[in-house]
Image 1 (cartoon, rainbow, N blue to C red):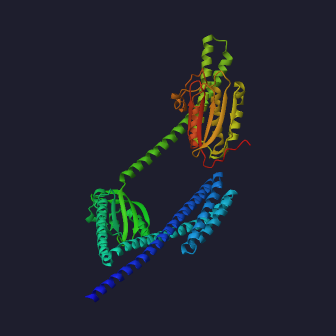
Image 2 (image 1 turned 180 degrees about the vertical axis):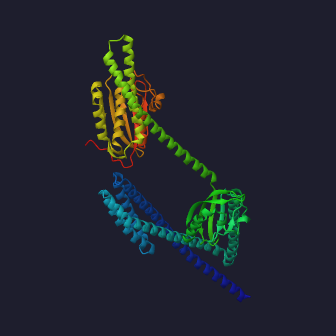
Image 3 (image 1 turned 120 degrees about the vertical axis):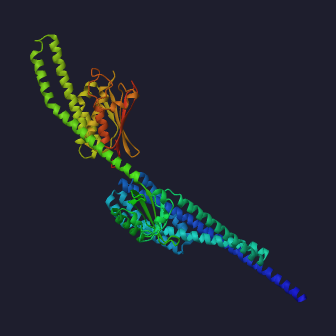
Length: 571
């Protein structure tokens, strides 16, 4: 008994000493692995920051390439970003200079830094084509390689952090369990494993139930086919979408339900999808319903052959018959509208052109009649002859304006780089008599070069400035032309100090033949602003007016700034 008691005491001391030793060892391991996990998380954070700076640098390069110049903002941002990247790189090196992931980052970072620096130097020097060539040869490949290296390093350190964290947590659990004894540890572990297994089983069961409910009640049909297009699974939604029960489709060849003319297209999609891992391809085919009629479906095929749970090609399809019909109807209406507009323009041009000859004859003979018989007949006859001459003149002006309006869309020249400074100068030259007689003062801000047609833009400037001179009050006309860049467009404005416009007529004045004043008050045909709108719309912009009665008017119009230059400075 004594020996047994001593043996038990010895075993107890052995257990206690062993537990104390294991506890101390585990505590040191926990501390070590905790520090390692913290180190990996820190490296991961730095890798994420570097990837963000790389993407920002690439975005600046892309924007500069698109604009074909390196603007001031990019010039200031690039050095700061590169300095931040270099600082992060050095910090990562301090943490993990010997690791294999870092060596790959070091190599790809050096290649990318040299390439991007050379490209920005070319962009800064205006050598756009050389920059594009360098981008294809070096920048893009090194950019992709650097992102890949950063991603691999992030994955490595993420796994490392998780593993070290797991070991640290396991060590903490081990310390707590050793305090209760080795047997209790085994018991608790067994219970823990059982609970985890049960929780995982329940979670898996709930996940499967949610997935099945989602699939069976989806608005689209979800199916799994093999590489030969044989259906292995199809969701219950097939009954709602194409009128076919799942058991009718399962085990059958999907191509058998596809229109013969579309089978080759679907076969090509499935074949391409099967050859490329994780590929997702889309096509549209005609599908035969159970009733025998055809519907148009959109098919999305996804390669999941490498997924052991699926081992096939997952396809989803939905009925887009109504959408296709609506699209066809929309195209047909657009074609009809375009044809109608063309016919109307041709009609306006032909009608105006054919009226010219009889109108010239009427005008000539009425003027001849006025010269020969003026004062030889009674006063009424002189008045009637005056009406005829005036009517012929007004009709001729109206027909010429109508011809101008119809030619905006039909006889416009191709758009090209147009200097608006030169356009404004030509318009002021054409208006010099009206400017001199009215005492008008026209001022301007610097104007850009835009994509446009010089003659039509000249007509636009001339009409708007001419309106500012025509619709003046007792004061001498003052007109200011300005321009600024706004939301990707050039926004032009022409402000005058004239009689102004009631805001309720702000849209009406741009409609052809719409006038707000009588011909006795202000001569004209009511076509000028309609021509302005048509010119601006042909150039891809819009035009509007802001005004109040008696407070002048400001006409605004936009022109796209796709390839426009900067507004020149006066200096």
